[in-house]
Amino acid sequence: MKKIQSVNNRQCNDNATELFQKKEIPIIKVDINGLQGLDDKLKKIKLCNYQCDFVTEIQKVLNLYDESELKYNDKLVLFVMQEVENFLLKAKCGESKKELVSSICKIYFNNEIDLVEMVINLVFHKLSQVKFIKRQCFKILRFFLKVRQSH
Image 1 (cartoon, rainbow, N blue to C red):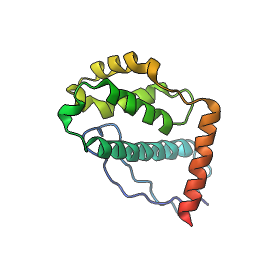
Image 2 (image 1 turned 120 degrees about the vertical axis):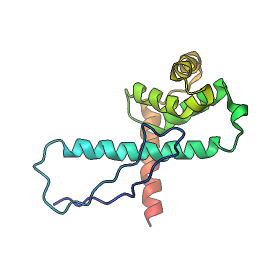
Image 3 (image 1 turned 30 degrees about the vertical axis):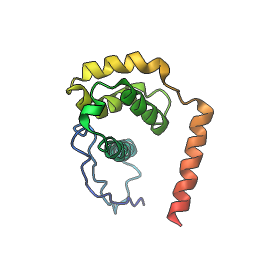
Image 4 (image 1 turned 90 degrees about the vertical axis):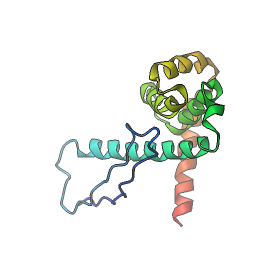
């Protein structure tokens, strides 16, 4: 029998959160092993909550600056792209990374997602991509940090 922990239903910072809102994972007290597709739905909810926390943390950092300082700044986009690259460690998820960067940076580009995507394409060659070995090291590091925090 699976028991799933409940997560508080919070919303992310409203500047970039139409797409990334926390969802509650219900506590289930029945046997759900035979239910098809439930694991995929729970993984999507967990990923969405994880992305929501990431967006919130990036917005906290960016809120330290005045909005006029970051307006139309390509270095901001490169910084956010690098953080997203280090955050999402799945291979072949470029579209979700681009969507995440666009949702974070669009407020600094007058809410024009097309303009943000053009800047992403312009600065993409400067991005240090995470390769397989580095991705595995990040995963191991995150695992041990979680184990250490739980004790």
